[in-house]
Length: 469
Ligand SMILES: [Zn+2]
Image 1 (cartoon, protein in one colour):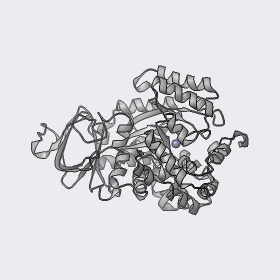
Image 2 (cartoon, protein in one colour):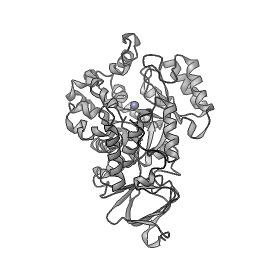
Image 3 (cartoon, protein in one colour):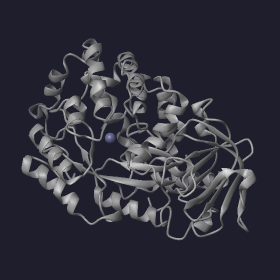
């Protein structure tokens, strides 16, 4: 596929960019995701890439020549984040950015693997030559086995220390990774060496919990976030160490095997669930301020027997065939054959308890893993978080305020506040009444650029057309 968004095409998209016409959204209800309040009859003015004014409409002074969007009856929220993707590591990732922007996803944390490619996307999006979300780039710290071509293979303690030091020494700004992304096959001694060195130098590390380490150990070692329910599901059983020993046993792998294929035996996990142990783990996470990205959406196709409500055939026209080709064949057969068991493990997975115990959560999708679609699936994840027991406000925070707090960026992101970066989503209905209303998008503003309904439709149509060639 050819690059679909070439330099200087913004005029063709019908969207205005930074430094161009200011935009005013007038008489809109602003959702304050920090307090939960709805600020009625506000006007929000965007100039360049920043919010110039956000306050009562009566006090707003519209700049001369501003593009005015009538916000009456509409709701304004901060741009959404997907805090777990593998979408910007391919040269052909040009489908992912437009899909995210069209769906109001204006920020993404890339978990790896090909860091050079990710940094290129980050740079090109930041300077406006590609359309996509603000990127936070992880450099993968891979275990020693199996998956070739991935960066930073770590065999021993020295490799681990070197990986941290290399990142710390790299040039700052857009040519540098933002954090170390942990691989499940990383060994125990190298992991703790990495944690120690990272803490010493001040480099964040996050991602999967290595099989050789327990969730509580990773939390206490300072891992910033842990990803996905299956680590937590295992940690909530009395056989956690047995499962992990099995998973980290590389002698069971044959050449070409994907170690992740050997992941969960969900039935055994379900049968050894231990409520007290689970609460203890969750309390450890809360005490250590370890964040969790549940990626509940990842398990939906399995839990629903790959029905069309979970696989969304209507969205498949937006994802390159080269990615979709592996979706069914790579689906873990152990999980695929037991939808009922996955469904019940999923329901005991305790995302609600995490929230109630004070563990902070991040919305993430693992796109483009099997039947997970960049942009679209963030809204599905928010809906699942509400089903898991969060309020709509709490769910909305996992994709707005929480990512900004996690990234230490509350001074520039996370709320609709004057002075912050203009990443915004204008909705036709109130997401606090029904979280599914985040899909009812009237306009998206990404780094100050306005994508109205027509511009969003063009983004989607362009991806679809480009993929046909
Ligand atoms: Zn992932």
